[in-house]
Length: 613
Image 1 (cartoon, rainbow, N blue to C red):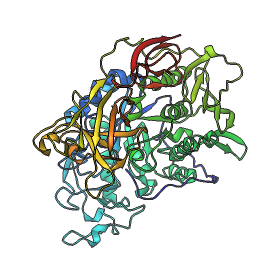
Image 2: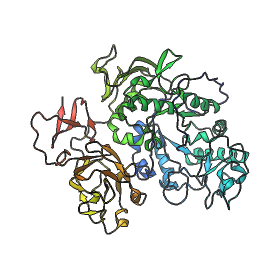
Image 3: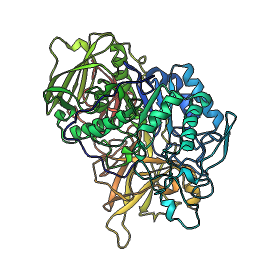
Image 4: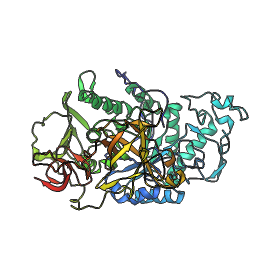
């Protein structure tokens, strides 16, 4: 969950006192070699349905040993992501499916060796009919309820008219407006949380926890909850770019929880935004180069690395660089990498190969790293696993490590390369040279908006034609209305007599309201699912004119071009022999430096399948 303090990058690390471990370790296993998938993003109600995830269990379980899913407890009527929790023990019929579907999904993945991580939201809680009427629930022969004595005395409830007054102790962390902040010093609250965690593990069958918004209460309470419920995996969302702050929280839990590596995430953001790969390096003790973030100085075991998550993806913290290269960095480093679902869906072939290399070499969360080179255009490091070594290079430099040849390259692409002398089993057989159309592309798609044929007329739209992963509308004339300098448009899958008809089907639109589009520059788009939020789809704004408009479903980007320049069924002249080819793999993802294999090749408006040798 997003918190409201903007994280800052730490400039230095302070010396941390390392407490001795007492009893069992319920944080994260040492030398852990698994990779995690965040199996959702904001409003992923279709992609993250329990039945949909379960249907992909054969594929996902080959690459991911942990899958983090949204909070599964019921949080009221309507669709929601689970961050305003109501029920803990008795009702797990959520926006993602029924409780029986949840249990079946967890069991199916467990049988294939993949554990499901619960999103545990215990910093705050929501009432069922008013601000604070938490439900009375029965589980394990006991009654569970939290009253006003379990709500922090400085919660905003204290000033709400017509509501019960909170009588708990002051908050031990940051306040969260929108739900009632729970008083974790209260014995009854602790008892409820401890047993809720136990219920998630022992009854529903989850493998471990992702604790939401742990800045909202003192870290010592996560130690209490984990030592009681005994999860195999625990990771907290301590959203802060400071190495010192995240390390201090891990220590506060008695090292009974790992943490998401926000310092590493912000270092990755900065490295790619500034084209400066030296940002991927931290000088341990001021002298020894190590990977940036939490994956050094004794915290690698407790670090879950990531490039983006559901919050940062729609926040100012979103990663906007080379997604595959950034994932190559975390997948070829210590810590436990957590791959984001949209990144996986858009770059599946490349990420599969990177995970296969990691697994073959046996890279784990405590692997030793020797940084071989660090310049603005090159991060190169040797990483030692349980079964071998690899060398990873991130950046544009055409450098190779000493002792390795091209035959040792196990994965490569734009801005990254991985060498190893350890054999790697190819993740998938050779794809069918004539694959079926990519899944997820709508059958029908129309441009609607300030059209010359009718401004936002629900019966009028310019139909888009399909070509592989793309759909294009040609010669779309857009005009601005009085008082506006831009023309606005979005994409719909159904036309009809009114907006109720249109919004009963999926829509595709901008990430932000009235997002500007520049001709020739791709922008991302989102799916607004029917009966969820199609009516809330955002539109784009563009200068009035006539355009080709292309939606690329391979990477979920929209491109507005002058007519005939879309590259799909356009009106441009037939290319000559000198037209520069553009290569795409068979999943429709552009490849700037193709290695030998079969590709879709575009020359002007000519598309063919060719083998690169």
